[in-house]
Each structure stands twice: as structure tokens, then as C-alpha cells.
Amino acid sequence: MNRQKRTGDTTPTGPSRAATLLLVGAVLGAAVVIFAWMNTDAVPVEVFLWEPEISKALLMFVPLAVGFVLGWGLRASRARKKTDEKRGKGKGRPGPGAGGGKPGPGG
Image (cartoon, rainbow, N blue to C red):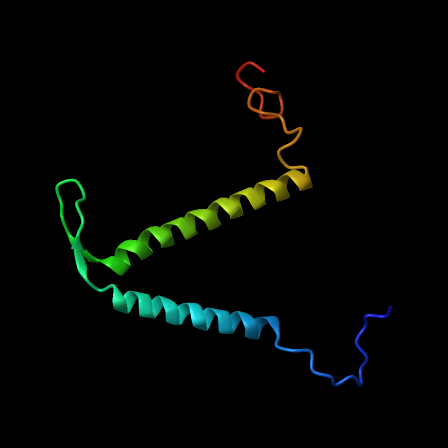
């Protein structure tokens, strides 16, 4: 089977991945706006001795955003660690006092 596209082939291949992601993002964005609009009621939140009033939507989105940021950070950290291991960094490298650095006093 030859999977290469012919130069003269003009058959439609369907929506591109970018268009699909844009559509999904627009639908999710609209859902978020509607959710926030429906949950604008202020509720008191006790933080030690401080008791601010925050909208319900903000109270739900802040922990969600913090979770996304922490998840991306951990994923990036693990990916970097795996990349370093594949390149040989971190393996067989002498640690402190293993004789690989500058000579100490009297040496």
C-alpha cells in the first residue's frame, strides 16, 4: 500500500487537527463563560482569621488552575529527567568527594 499523497489529488481529507482543536476550545470556552455567569454569587471563605467573600466560580476555578499548573510542571520535570537519562546525564557522573572535582587542601 502506498500511503503517499499524489500531487494532483484534490479529494477533501476532512477538518484539520487545528480546526478541530479550535472548535473544541470554543465550545469549552463558552461552557466556562456560561458556568461562571451562573455562579456569580459571593460566598464567605474562612482563611485563618480572614473571611473574604469570593464568587463560587472563582472559588472553583482557582484550585483547578493551580492543579493544572502543578500537573504541567511535574510532567515537564519528569520529561526532562527522562531526556537527561537517555542522553547519559546523571549516570556514572562522580558525586561530591569522588575525586572528579578540584583537589582539596593539601592535594
